[in-house]
Image (cartoon, rainbow, N blue to C red; front, side):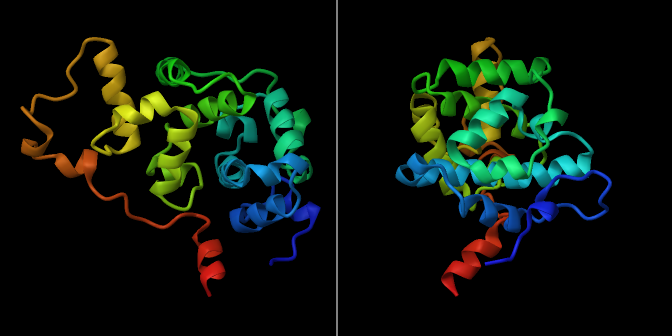
Length: 223
């Protein structure tokens, strides 16, 4: 395991070198809240999100809260409940008191809220995180820092089971979200008679290839 100090984990926008997501992930996972041991997948997801969020916040010169869609209070609550080590990585005073979402994000956030499994704070945080990270450029599982699409499928099934059950054809999640939003508004997403007859089939259903930011962890575990 990497030797990581509190100093080099702290987000410093003046530092020309972005934080290492793998080092951050390992540090966060090394210090879990007591009950997080009983829900290792949820702790893993939050650690992934914060690790890539800190990197992106540095690169985009924004706060971690802006990068992952959480307010100061939400970040603090998440860290204290799941990953106490995150409190050493985040300058809470630099976070916004309220997370703000533009019109496009609000539509997606409302879709997710309609399909939440219960009112647990973790699910509420996941809704905001998925909303914000869906605006990034890569596959959603990559933008969340997850190891592969299978982990995203599991996350959606656990936190948004009714929505996940509607993605029967295993459409790419960002494409699926926007298809659902269009249908809710009474629009047709495309004019192809069926998906199989569409010339752009792979754009919606093709393999989601690529390497996770945290893939080095998996390689290390299998070595």
